[in-house]
Image (cartoon, rainbow, N blue to C red; front, side, top):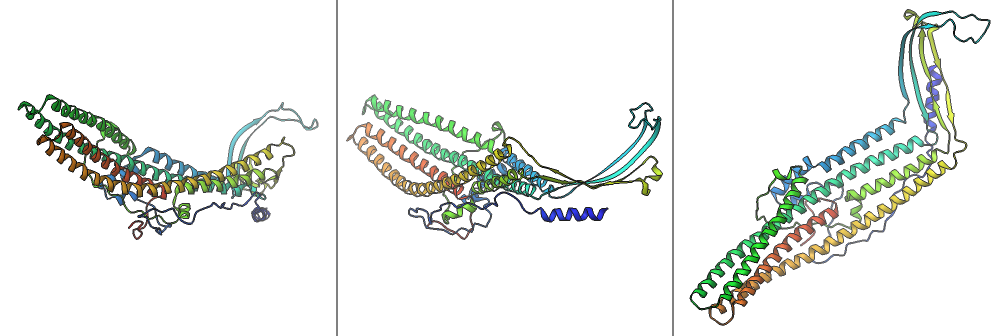
Length: 476
C-alpha cells in the first residue's frame, strides 16, 4: 500500500512546477549617466557590494559614535522593525511548509457503551447493548498537489516580503542614525552660537563700562549708555532663546537613544565640525545602495507573485490524503493484521461559478503590482533628487562658509575702526553699536553655516545609502 502512495506523491511533486501567473522581471528605470557636479566635486567609484555600516564615524566625533551605538541598541522604532523582520521570516517559513506533505499521528483510547435501542439500519438484524474498548493508532498525510503553482507563488511572495522587511530594517537604521546625527549637529551648532553670544556679551559689557565712564566724565551723553545697554539686553534675550532650542534637540536625542528625557543631558562643548569627503559614484549605484529602493523593488516581486496566487484560483485544487493505522477493541491485538485500517484517496475541488470573484481578485493583484511599480520608480526619482540636492547644497555651503569667515575678519576691522573713531571724538557711538551688531551677526551666520554644512553632509550620506570604502574620495 505504501509503494503506490510514495509513487503518487513523487509524481505530484514532479508535476507541480507549472506555476500560472507572470514570472518576475525587474522593471527598467531611466537613470542618468552621471550627476550634475559642481566644484569641488568629482566622480567617485564606491564599491557597492560592501557593507554600508557606521558612516557617522567619518565625522570623527567620539560622543556621536557612542550615541549612535546607544540608539542602535535601545531605539524602540528600530526594535519594532526588527520584530517585523522576524515575523516576515516566520511567514516565509510558513509558506514554504506548504510545499511539503503534512504528516500527522493520532491515537484514541476509549471505553464506550452502544445502546440497544439505537435506530436500526436493517430490521432483520437485532440490536444489542454492548460495552467495549476502542484502541486506535494511526498516521495521516495531507499534500496539496501544486499543479498550477499556487503554493509556489505564495512562497515567492512570502520570500520577497521577508526580503522587503530586511530592507526596511536597514532603511529604518539609516533613517535613525541620520536623524540622530542631524539633532546632534544642530545641538553642537547651537553650542557654537552660544559661545559667540557669550563672547559678544563680554565685549558688550566692556563697551558699556567704557560708555558709562565717559558719561560720568561728561564726555558723552546718556544716550550712548542707553544704546549700549539696549544692545546688551537684546543679546542676553537671544541666549535664552537658543538655550530653549538646544534643550529641545537634547530631548529629541534622548528619545532616539531610548533614554527618558529627564535623565539625559549633553554638556555644552565646542567640537570640530568638518564634514567628510563623500564619494558619489554614478546614479545607478543608488539601485544597489539605498535600502528604501531595495524595499520598493522587493515589494514589486511580492506583488507580482500575488498575481500568480490569484490566477491559480481559476484551476482545481487537488489534495492527496492517505492514512494508515490500526484499530482494535483489545490492546493486545492492536498490532495484529486484522486490526490494520488504511485509506488512499484524492480530492479535487473546482469552482464552477463565483460571480466574478476570482477575476476580480486577479484584477486586484494586477492593480497592486502596477502600484508597486509606480512606487518603485517614485522612490528612485526621489533618491536622485535628494542626491542632487545634497551635491549642490554642500558645494554652495562650502563657498558660503568661506565667505562668512572673510566677513568676520572685515566686521572685526570695522569694529576696531569704529571704537578708535569714537574714542577720538570723530564719530558717534551709534557707529560702535552698528559695528558690534554687525560682528555678532557675522559670527552667528558663520556658526549657522557650519551647522548647515554638517547637516547637508549627513543628508547627502543618507541619500547615497550609507558608508563607503576607505579607498574612495569624492572631493579634492
